[in-house]
Length: 293
Image 1 (tube, helix red, strand yellow):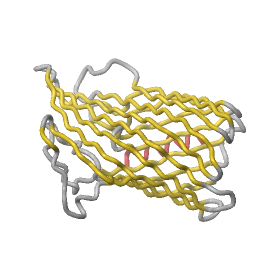
Image 2 (cartoon, rainbow, N blue to C red; image 1 turned 135 degrees about the vertical axis):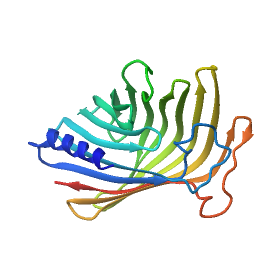
Image 3 (tube, helix red, strand yellow; image 1 turned 60 degrees about the horizontal axis):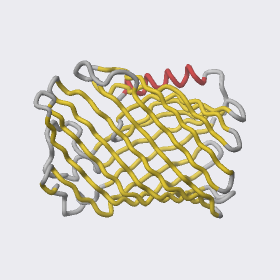
Image 4 (spheres, helix red, strand yellow; image 1 turned 90 degrees about the vertical axis):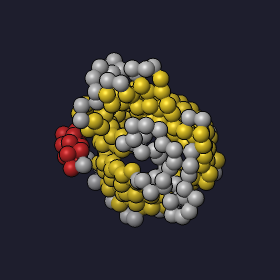
């Protein structure tokens, strides 16, 4: 963990050394709404007591009225760690984003895995918008143990109402890794969601509500036998993101996704889920802050 943050801090300092008005965001991530990432065969149950942990540290810098830069280390429970450097060009009706990203310290065999991120957003300000983002690893799929790929895509269609932005969203993620010459594991994620971002001028807090159906899949492929086995976990999720501006320099952040109902499978068999609290409460959460300099 220390090595990850050291690399990130060096990156941020080198990019933003001569810049001002920097926003720096730090987040801690945890949860149990996931499969065991160390497993090499399918799971017959979700324990609810096996947690993932991660941390993000990234900066946003507005270079001028039309151009901004996002850079830093970002954690995702499906995609693991990526180091991002994305430039965004903003005009009244369109936003374009592009930049490289690097999978960072996700396996011992591949310290950095390069990729490219692109984004486009068209909007009628105050009325509606549509956006598309795609992140993809560059290069051949796998040639040796430890090689991996990261894929992310998101499509959104939103509209504005008084004091809120509503949107319909589709998000997909995929992390595939070659564990050995005979085993490849792929984690996939799909989310269909309706989000409501609530805000009000001169009010220090904001709330984003997320109503979603999510499908998490973990596939184990035996390349020597050209066969595979699979775990699937489906969840109806209620999520919320809360921001509170404590002062001009500090904004507090909290995110929580809670499973209202989950069900899944191990091949043709039902997946066993915990039935007693606290293990039965399946969630993903993040807690952090943004500092403005």
